[in-house]
Length: 325
Ligand SMILES: Nc1ncnc2c1ncn2[C@@H]1O[C@H](COP(=O)(O)OP(=O)(O)O)[C@@H](O)[C@H]1O
Ligand SMILES: [Mg+2]
Picture 1 (cartoon, rainbow, N blue to C red):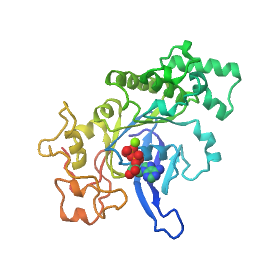
Picture 2: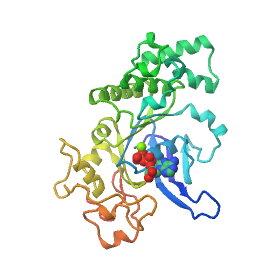
Picture 3: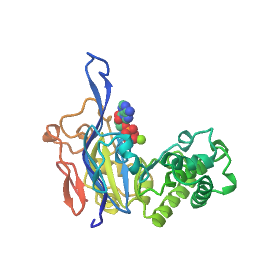
Picture 4: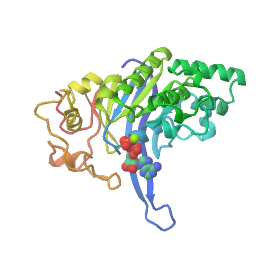
């Protein structure tokens, strides 16, 4: 992609101490994100897919520095934001936003819709009271909400409308980059497409860049330009969506695609369903993280972790034996 990278991750690692916080106790870590490097280009939607617990949310939070990396760099518009303090992050906060899976738990039930959407103005100290009211109305319209509801509370809305409120709030400061963390996973299928279409419209209107997280491969295919596949905190495969869905090379991606109901993206020789359990994110395997479930595993896969290699144009795979379809 010739486009300019808006955000770059370089060897980003995030570990969480789950034991050993007390003095004398041995430290144990969950390895949530392991040495992930990728670029996100201006105006694109990067889909991030993988099973539950593979580090998608942590990666999304790292991208907008809601989480600080344990190692590695996060570079936004050529500025290294990896280790900025909350105060130093403040000017970047308006550019970097997130919407969540469950709009209900992310909206304060005691605040009216108008106050929820205006909250970012408070934080950034923007606009007079009158201007805020105008801006809130504009945002509600933009997100398909009737402005007569401005004084209502979140519980008075349906799931889809609540997600529109969450989107309106995220858009309040006209961000450049938005992480959408499973934004439609809690919604009925019919509502899902409305929210996805809204996000796509907003992207076109405002030249937004998205990282769109989902475990649903159909949703990811619909919305993404490129797709990143994660497993156990590792980036396993990354490519343009059609390349990834029709010419996947990683056995994990193939197994994921084979599990999509109704759609025939999968490869014949590797129609294998995923068997076995995901290894623990605490005791990391020495070799390939996918080795314990891989249908084509070989001896050397257990010894060393495969590094991400470009096997076709803009198509990256971390596998010792990639078989591009
Ligand atoms: N704050 C935290 N403290 C400890 N472990 C965490 C924390 N957040 C996430 N994890 C762990 O990190 C791993 C990745 O989690 P997450 O990023 O939520 O994955 P996903 O969004 O793909 O389901 C999981 O093993 C999870 O239990
Ligand atoms: Mg998650």
